[in-house]
Length: 150
Image (cartoon, rainbow, N blue to C red; front, top):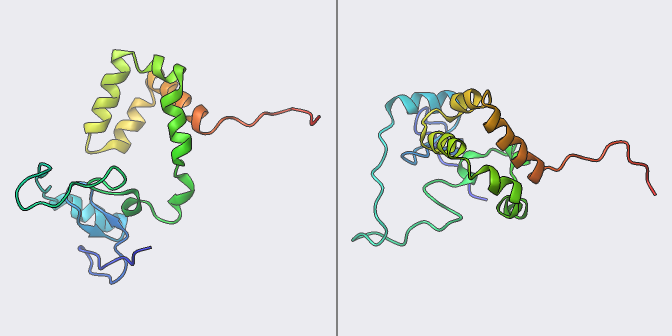
């Protein structure tokens, strides 16, 4: 595990456990994130194979990695890759994703800067709730209740 560096906003040593997904700047907390976000200047994305550039980030480490944004407390919320693979194998989820309205909602969400407030808004949409419930039922199947052991 790598040791966090200093926070770019407040300068706290060894505290910068998070990275800005737009520019890669390291920061230590929500207040520092908010301060940084107000003056963040996204770095232009370089094309793979551009002169003077090393190899592009691998699929496990894109412009930012989960290790950069998840704290140890958040680790319990991480979905293991084998469960994520189940999403791709679900016929029910595949059928939902054929809906153009749902696809537009997901595209809008993916491109939004303030994803959390947009997510709250989308959770008022029955189709989006159905999509979210479907995903959750795949990665966290409901425990069977009232089942007598055999």
